[in-house]
Length: 186
Image 1: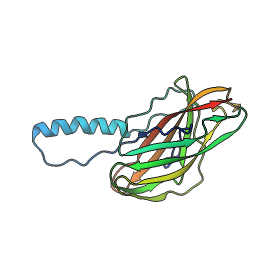
Image 2 (image 1 turned 135 degrees about the horizontal axis):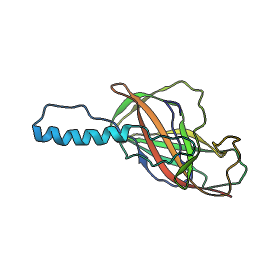
Image 3 (image 1 turned 30 degrees about the horizontal axis):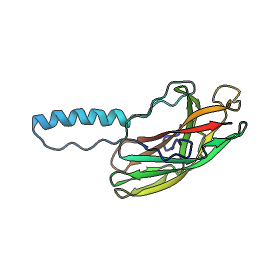
């Protein structure tokens, strides 16, 4: 998955997910410091990208400062190579940085990654969003297995996820995830 990529979840349901960011530390009492350390550790864990690798188990990390809502077809015919959709990204707080022009999308079945994000040939774009602001980006999910040979997915229900990587002006890259959204291959 490209560092500035967005993974998309399929299935036209309006579900929400998110990424995370770490707040800067401030002067505080020892009690406040201990509480912030725990919160910061949780935020840092949420900010770490989940491993999206073919055949590996996947569990979406905790939500953070970006909320993702995928809009995709709920059903697609078997043998189709891709499904197009959009991902709406809502900023929980103001954020400025650089991100991909599109979201990455991948599918999971029985808790394991069965398709991975398609490559993107795009330069990062400026990302400025006020608290509560929504931006929409395109997303394409592969419907071909990520296993060697890349055969079309078998009919059945899949979970579609989206991922969006943002590199804020004042910090390290963070990955926001959305989904799961149900996608049925018929």
